[in-house]
Image 1: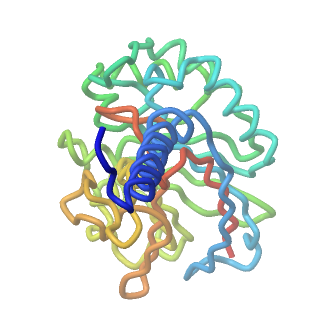
Image 2: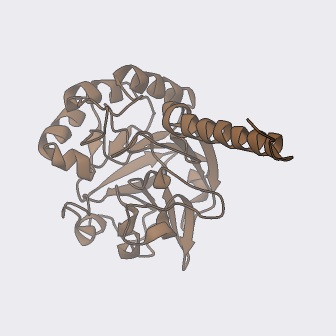
Length: 283
């Protein structure tokens, strides 16, 4: 074999270390992280929110994509059990319950998904909007399935809710990507001066929401699914890039919260962006 370079052993160990690191990252991104979830609790101080409603605890779930890898009905039931364990006052569902075109996934009908979601428990109820994948799979059918389980679907509609003798409104915006959004119609149903939460599937609707809203809530981005140190999220399904990718965003005194969601789209990969149950306490 001849004489080996003096640093051959060091180079071999370095290559082996890099190979192990690469394999570990791939295993984490394609197996471990997409198959687990975290409960992420956030306390938000938002404008125009009555003191009597302080501490309102809501659960925000989005982008379930039931049928994507690791996310079958059994896993959905476990997610719902964990959500109920957090004892939210109100549950908000931000759309994309169904799946399209995810490799190694399996399509699940909306009726089965709705039956599981009907087991969510909150004293103020469960409210929902539809996402682009829901409309691509017959949005009217998805709406009927959800409503048959007692879930209120807001399609450019607003609903008053009362808690501790004080009322507030939740306005649901139709899906922007598929052309169903009508912000003036939804917000026009809210009486002047009433506390208001806006629920939308895509965060791209946020620039269209005026200062009447105390908080806009959305999903759709999946937090980019992959978020790299120093680089951020290379791919975000938003016209605004990383501006609305995830978390609490404040612009000109207006507040937005974007959850990273639960399932995956196109490829079942997550890195640095685990599936989440978002629990928000409003003050």
